[in-house]
Image 1 (cartoon, rainbow, N blue to C red):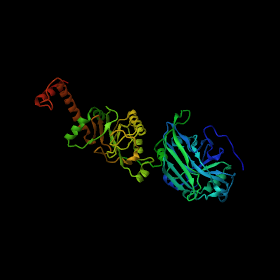
Image 2: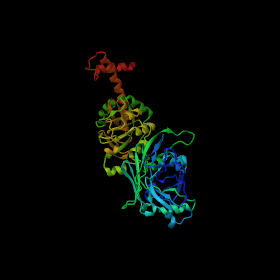
Image 3: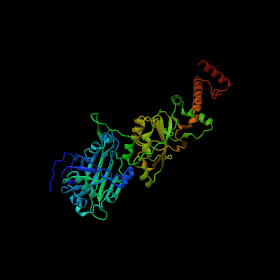
Image 4: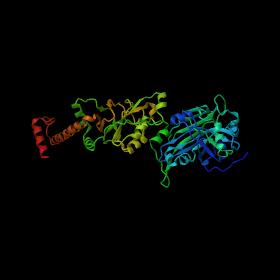
Length: 494
């Protein structure tokens, strides 16, 4: 048998192969479950190359470069070629496979646009193809009986068998051998089923290939995601993401927004609301019969901050493990809203007043701040409390809590009526918050309410000045006819 024995660079092994493969060839869509998720079903397999320098070993790390966000795993079955194959018929193709093992075909979706289909940068990073830890002798298994499973932080996120493939494993070997010589040690990555999604620094991804009911197994391939400290420079294409890339990376389709959007605040009205204190607005709303418009129990993370904006809403339901598996991961309702919030909008979160877990953290706060959000109101808790405050984004909440979302909540839907802190909030309602609290103003009343509030504030300021000069409150607060006459005379002079 031909041999291939290059030396692996320092810090990178060859996985279970012992030598570097001459070629790594990866299949695009190959599982029916993944094809359904992507909304397209190929008639024939298609391929791309990965560099041999991307090989990694079990127990290693994969780095998410600084300035990127969409590093996704793909658990896969890898075939290792044992004898050279050229123009091989499908019924003889498996004879040229020496072994089967587990693989993880990591990809950085931030660079897909730059690659224009080649996957050189998005899939070719060092360590982006961990293999192993062991090999299954191909002679001992039926290629139609293999099972693939992937776990992230202990949770099973992918499980499929080769019965779910659109094309049998033999076909990949036979098809490729029509175009090029497959050499001993070459690796074919045979595609990933549904369940691939984005991972973050600190996450541990585990992949295993086995034959159910037997002892045949690759062993479990462990890879830890780390955060890089170096960013890409402008000597080449820079990372770029959009809603399509996010949806494909997270593995969840983006819900199209409603065509009818809430009317934006005019600059003039916003300026008036920024001047108006919440206590004054609350008093004027009460005069108009609206007593249940205060969002209770929330305090600002940045004392002295002011929020004015139109509401975008997010509803959490109580955590139920099966629902969290379907709605909690991927590009879920929470992430979609924080990715689509507009300038001057306020994210209002219904967490049922349960502060027993965070409802956002610093990454989401940074995203909302970057997009120009006016702030966040949540009747739940906030993770990374100090880091969120450091972003400069005003957030009103019940305070800090270290637990992740899934401890208490499932992100369910967006831009619907929600109940936050005892108040009903509709998309497009006007939200105003300061150190006294938060109120919800129906848009149709905003001009009237803020005008009356500012008039009352001028009056109250004059009364406070009189009291400060030693005058008694009786008859002054509120103004009796005599004092009102004096106040109106003062106003005219002003």
